[in-house]
Length: 262
Image 1 (cartoon, rainbow, N blue to C red):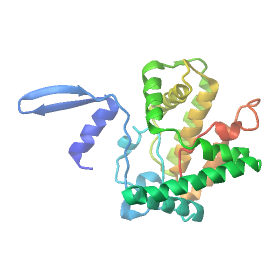
Image 2: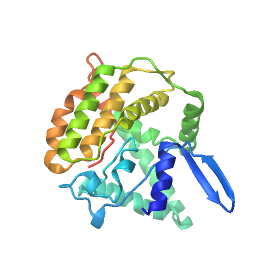
Image 3: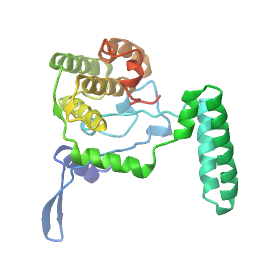
Image 4: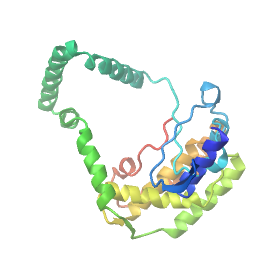
């Protein structure tokens, strides 16, 4: 990233504005939007023995402005590799009109298999096959509705827990040489909790939303560390990601989405 782009993205992420001075026109444009950025690791492969900041050519001020850092590694997993290969081949097949008849036949076979699975008692798997994915148009409408209609308010905020988390993350950041933890990360926890609240179309952020936001923040922080200290940090920060009592046996799997893929 050159110096001009770095200056522009600093202003956009911090002030949510873009300043323009060209052809005698001096103005400021609003840039209130989310930013999703992707960067390739230095050398083409992520080095697990080095922290996140040493793997990408981005300055620490820019990294501190992102709410979540996700490390996506190309690991060898036969099941996932097969699923990815089927998806790519299927995408190419659907792009050719002559393959429509074959696709129709395959769809009928899949539907027949799902009916057989349902009659055999595998209701969970059969229902997932029958329902399929959420239509893209419906998902777009849902997100638009949540963005325009939902304006969450903080109902319950565990200030002591957030303060302890911030203190521990700053201490471990200095000890491990990771990207610096600043006050922006406190604001990130609030924004993430509001996002979880909007997903439920709720008007108030609950304690569960705060816990999920903290879990995502911890996963992002631990996942960006070097391999030698990642396990120790995961154990040290486990107290912040444990589910609250009385939430049921499935709360552990429901409370935290995958923020870091490794």
